[in-house]
Length: 190
Length: 192
Image (cartoon, rainbow over all chains, first blue to last red; front, side):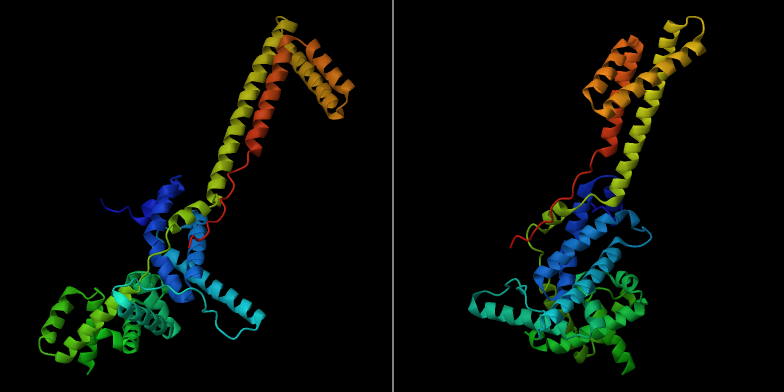
């Protein structure tokens, strides 16, 4: 059966079918949490902010403009919420006079593709390398790479969300991936 | 060099599944004769695999947490409020119609043959009884309540029924206006 389009689910929610919102949450939860994790670099915060984003979107659902895509709206709210969260975190850190940048917090462990102690170590190394490589990208590239690979947005959706020409999106993604490729070269040859 | 950069961009788009078919055909031709691009292609494909492997599932029960934490949205409250007003307005109209009917019946008993005069007389009676009853209830004194009850019971059966219906409707009206919306669920917490 064809999945119901987002806009149809939104209409159903506004007509009182709350389960339709559950379908939207199901559809976007993984993508939004992964995207937020790449911005916030903390699993618990990513989940908490994602939950807040879904609630915000639900409360404002009657203001959703069907001329735009639900996905871009959701990720825009997510992006703003992540920025707010980073701002709050900085204020908290300044008030505590701490030197670190708040990246403590539980890391997300990669699902183990390899068995045995060697495989586990390899997975941990790979997970850390990916995190570092993505975190080390300049902001504008990290944002687009996260939207594409973790938010799973199309180039058109990213262009709409970031209000950039499509060509710029393609170019930045290309450059971002070239940087990642250089950073992760040790994991790309085996 | 410029042409090679184009192939690199195409390789990147191909690995991402976004390269148009006609460009893909030209890229395939180029790959047949360029070992460096074939190697680059392998690296890009592997990069996409590594990034795909880095995608994590959300924590178990996340959807249920979100659904449990959803408050009543403002747009639903607005719809409910209009629903309440419609119900209240309907009750008021019904009340007015019923009152008119009762007044007409009571008036016909009081002054046969003069419906307007009798209706006016019944209306004056009803207002007087209501005022006395209201004053008695507001004073909240036993004498006030006694006076109100006495006045009500000394009135004609039509007035009595009218007062009872009036009170019932007012209570219903009040109930529909002050009924509280469903309170927001407590925000779900992470489970692990």
